[in-house]
Length: 166
Image 1 (cartoon, rainbow, N blue to C red):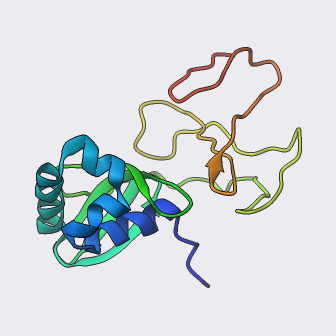
Image 2: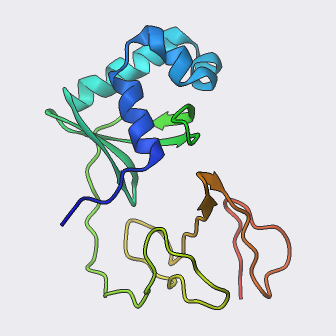
């Protein structure tokens, strides 16, 4: 069984963490400009000190997991399709995965890369991880760019953090 494809964010973060500091302005110009090269160098050094020698950067339901020979660190990143990091957040602590309750098999019949049609079941509301309440995460993109989603019976614009009560 092959591993799932790595996200552009995971690939971009791995490239960034293994690059020389002189390459950071090219790999993450907005991040470098926003916090400065010195602060960014302190953050990367601290991250690699917690994780150790970098092994992998993987996607997970909890964010990107930076794994090394000493441990794991959780991070979040936004990257353009060309791999340029536009935003980066790294937790200032070692990452320990939460205990998750076993989840029942999902009755969803689509997979990565499929085209979905109006009315097709995409997912179910649930609480299967480290969350405070049941919820459903949706994300759609075309050619690496996020798409605006529209739902029948849901007025107004959908945006990050919006709560819909039915």
